[in-house]
Image (tube, rainbow, N blue to C red; front, side, top):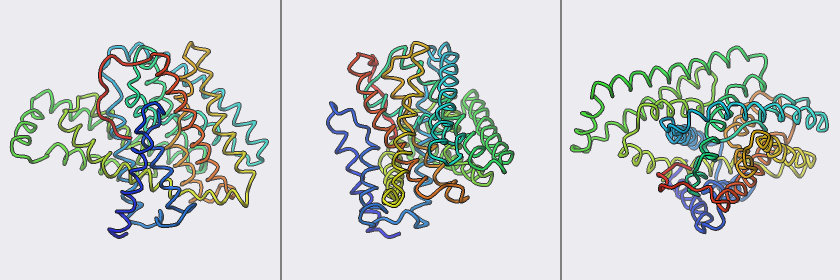
Length: 386
């Protein structure tokens, strides 16, 4: 990887803010970054090689950071969130049941035999997309608060379930790896809580701010890297490491200065790089030789929307059901792991990403409908990572 390639990635990533500039369109920044990646990557001009080792590694760091910042934006301390946990869990289970039925039907029509995998894809929700959309549109109120635990639960369960359905032979190993990463993040949370209780964190924060040491940022990045290393060693996606660590930090309390530093690092550099890399990884030309996979991708995307609309059975507004259908990390991991293991049909990985793009469009529409319906927060949203 060269500086010229890095400058190209940074330049095309500006398409994200450009498309999101008009608030009336209700478009998330990541959408433009994904489109830019498609244009300069395998599908388009080929200026960016997503398989280049340094770029792929930086993209992994960006993915972990994006998920970390997303985890820190789950309002664990919000008193209104606790009563919503039960309803969020019930909605996630209902969506999962509908997705399982749809997965059987889609797999039968496609003739792939991947019904469990399709079910996990359609049941998943991407906190990395949904929470920034909520913040960007200023959504709030009891229905939106009730959506958050549903997204978090679905995201976590599908992240854990994905390796089990992609590679059933190594399911015990994958389950053990996920448990190890979550347990390690929980231990970190306990240590942080004890340091906070004893006032150590506040003393370090005061000295770091006065002397410009950025100690807190350094420590967070070290811990995040360690958890990501554990995830890789245990054959688990770094997205779980980042999200679990973010939840642990949020449970203790994140200093505003640290939040601003992470926002700058993630949204200013590594986050856009990850989303451009993701778009560049897609080879939509495969659809030309395997046109049936276009139908599979559309079916998966629309199936996810239908499954999440099942939340209407539990009095969830349809707009928020559409917003909850957004997918990102799970389809990316499914395409990556499935391709590495050689268990996918030709063009199936691209179909997963097409389905994810369909859900992003559906989620954008749902977020816009929720904003127009007046589901807005009373306070100004905090900075977030896309």
